[in-house]
View 1 (spheres, rainbow, N blue to C red):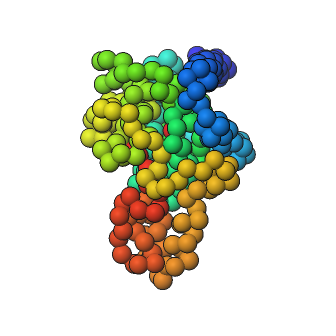
View 2 (tube, rainbow, N blue to C red):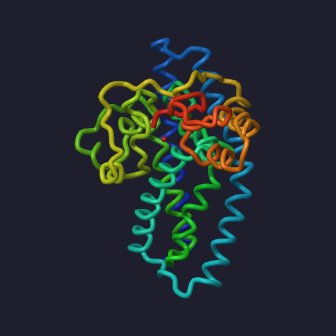
View 3 (cartoon, one colour):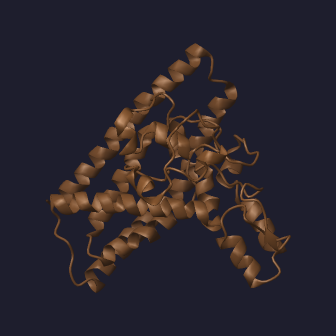
Amino acid sequence: MTHETLGEIGTSIDETFFVIGGAILLIEITKGLFTRSMTGRSFLDMLANISTQIPFLLVEIVLLVTAYTAYEVISETYVSWVFPLTVPVILLGVLVCDVTYYWEHRIAHEVRLLWTQHAVHHSSRHMNITTGVRFGPAEGVWSAICHFPLILVGFPPEVVFFGLLTVQAYQTWIHTELVGQLGPIEGILNTPANHRVHHGCDAKYIDKNYGGIFIIWDRLFGTYQREEETPRYGLVRNFDSVNPLRVWFSELPGLFRDLRKSKSLGDVWRCLMAPPGTYAASASRPSSKQGDTGKVAADS
């Protein structure tokens, strides 16, 4: 297989899930209008979701060019051998990218500095297709770092980026309440029901179901939770803004406040690296995990 063919397949996958997402969004809006469940505020929330693409894409365009160039240079200069560009290698690459995404995603929930970006995705009180494009401005930086080791073990940069795109594109359709539980598939794939759990802020749903395409990683690593009732979506703390600027940077004011109150490098380190909500610099002692840093319900 050539690099050009792989790129064309990646584009087709992205476009296919974009069309699926667009169709689901149209049904969601139509249903909301007919049932009168779509209020002015929920519509503004959808606009706030879409608005996050402005800062995200500004960062992502530069990041993708930089990361791809770095991946290429390191692969050609420092990696003595590279897997051939074959169908089995590409499928293996997608699988490895998916398990990498699980850990990237899980760590983003467990480290406050990373959470400042990922919390944007969790901060909506609604669940619809537009929630799937609600991203923190610099969320892609952590993803690029996490997938870098795949270059060192011999995966071609094209395969790594194809795997990244496939895992992200797949998740377009799972941000919806239109699709109910899908029987045995729920134990294998990440589905709308599984992902609704991830966005829930109920105690039993927090930090569950991190998977991208496959939910088997959650079952394997002990973070799986079946949807038992419709979750309450959003952050544990009281955040329900539709102001785009507040949505884009929702966690940064609290982080900066604690950093200013830090009295030592140890305080600074704990503010940045401790799990969200577990450390209050002003008190120099642990606080509730569901405190005012904005920890949400457990997921892209």
